[in-house]
Image (cartoon, rainbow, N blue to C red; front, side):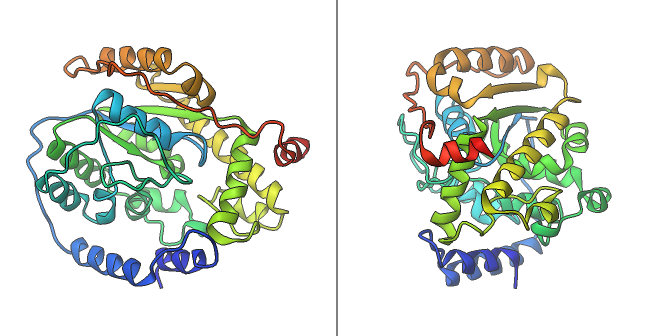
Length: 319
């Protein structure tokens, strides 16, 4: 049984259920598409904008804001269903002439968006390319020499060329291969979003309950020190997970040219969106002068979500 189906079965016990029959059919469709080779002309090398950051840190919000306020293309909920051949999803989406919703709504449920044109985490695409058969027991160093970086870049560029616009991609699992990824993927730009650690921890804790109905069930990616963390109490696991991944992201980005990255705090995006987006737009324009990064006239209305002052926040802060 695939890791994807195992995950779907586990989630039946929580409040976020997945239909097992649907998941199984999607797996079969993708296994079929994996055997097919489809081509699309890459007429322009579009910027690939990767949004990075810990789970529950605001990466989905950042992706939504970028999509709407800069008019970028995005790996949406249709494209992501074809993780083994996302070109198929991109062409399908475009051929159906979905009308892009001009909305300032920035809704999601634990990183999941519900409308077809909204961003998706794209985790199964990354797991495919990074050879992550079992994400809970992944040896990045062992698999790194086997990764086909050219194929990965080509798949993303074909999608961008279908949409004829810079492409925003959520890419959490890039964290396992940051240095090689930065060296191997041209025309890339990285946005790192960081949130108050204890707000992030409370949100992950609540997510465990929402998805699995059990605080002891792991939610999100598995850090390199997972074996050390899994025997700890749930709240200590979560803090260890956050610390490990934040350190890995920052270490990886330390080798990246400052002109190719933008670091933001979730709290600043929520309270000063016009300033943050203005600074980001200028940096993108300087790096990719052939594209227009003009900010949408309407500045997003973002509610700052914080658990400060709650008993659970204080409990995490005391650990």
